[in-house]
Amino acid sequence: MPYRGSDKRRPSLVQTICSHQPSSLAAGLHPAAMLTNPVFVESCVVLAVLLCVHMVVWNQHSWCTIALFIQAFYVQHKWDRLLRAGSAVFQFRPAANSGIVPGSMVMPLLGLVLKEKCSASGNVYFERFFMVVTITGMMLALFLSLIALGITRPVPTNTCVIAGLASSAILYTTKQTLTVSEVIEVLEVLLIFVYLSLIVLYLLPRCFTPGEALLVVGGISFIVNQLIKRSLNLTDVKGDPVNYFLPVIVVGSLLLGVFFALLFCFMESETWVSSLFFHMMTAVLGLGILMPWLSLFIGRHPIMWLLDFITLNDRRLCLLGYWVFLAVVATCVVLHQNYQRQSGSKKHQASTVVRKYFHLIVVATYVPGLIYDRQLLHVASVGCLAIFLFLEYVRYFRIRPLGQLLRQLLTLFLDERDSGPLILTHVYLLIGMSLPIWLFPGPCAPKGVLPGAGGLVPYAGVLAVGVGDTVASVFGSTMGEIRWPGTKKTMEGTATSVFAQIIAVAMFLIFDGSINLNSTYSWIVGSITLVAMLEAYTSQIDNLLLPLYLFILLLL
Image (cartoon, rainbow, N blue to C red; front, side):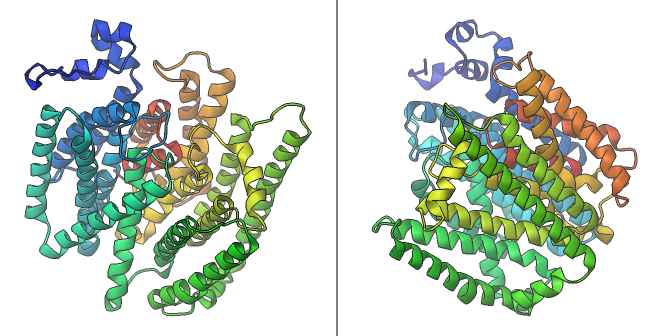
């Protein structure tokens, strides 16, 4: 039972953690009970990743990340209690914990390791940029913590004190390390995050946990701010034109979704008139706003640039043809599974093994691109993201002529994570596979390649999601018998996941001559094992979370 007495008699950390367990375990308050708590073990794995980072990177921000982890650990308990009681301000994804600890640590750790890489290469501009990323991630996590503490009754005094100490340390470090313009940039992202969170969480109930919302909305807020900043200072625009496609597509998709979500609150979306208006406004946004906007960054008309980019050599045309073939195969799988459902005598639902077919298809898509042409893969993945989001809008709003058909086809592949109005698992799969490519620190990598384990950084999505998660699910569901305490995941699935990823690394070494591990094999195996343990215990969207943590570890 939650404690309702005075703060002087508030339970200890061990008692707090054990209070989440069944009554028989909570009554004993034995430390072994914590090992059966998936939330506690998940936090321990994140702590292990944090310590691994600080074994390599230690600076003035390191103490702040440790303080952030401690306060996130305490605040996660408050969020979980709010979610169980239904007292949260918004409706979050059910059947999952809040995910505050893993969600809060991603952006700060990502900024720390990328800053260290840029510092080692002497790139001062990106070193300062990733320092801003680190502080921004901490500020967003603190804001989310303040929301939980503000709506918790009675007021958790001990947790408030811990959050206050962590906030003081972070604010002091911010004052010491950032310039005034950089502090203003952090505050701009925070302001965008506040308003965007209100809009997204109101329009899309049950689509995110608090930790997932922090990752997704925080990332979008940072992209929106960077795009606005660069649009207002076109003289400072520099870098590869490929890198500007993602921000423009993300902002355009966000504008399209928010506009029609608000509009269709007041009018019917299933009529032909509404559908024609939707398609017309999409064309206006794409051709009249996004294309000119993108041309400001790349200095040419985007379509002409794209044609020259695709036809640069025959290899790119062959890759595109191969990817089109795989897209047709994936479509055939969807149609075949729906035909089986219609012809079956009982309700047919795609099994875990069937859903993992798409993971294998995505692996077959990404590996040749990573080996032969990463720039083309970067642009193609951004284009696929735009197509996925557009089709999801068509399905969600029931836009004619494809809206109802997409609803019927995709319903077969729903799982417990698709509890909201949007179906996002396929979008998360694409994003998880693509994030290591989009985030790869090209300007801070000599000759575009990182030494040691860093050579596997672009493959982090393929390893964590395409290989590891797929093998763990298939073998765990078909042959697994020994379950990890407190979860449905099996030890056999986790073990085969690690083994399969090690085999995949060996295959990448054979076919990709740019990878030179330099005797970092033990670090790679340890990183893969940590992420596999996170997959076994987390209830968050693993397609999004696992590639980011493996990306962080391999960058070290």
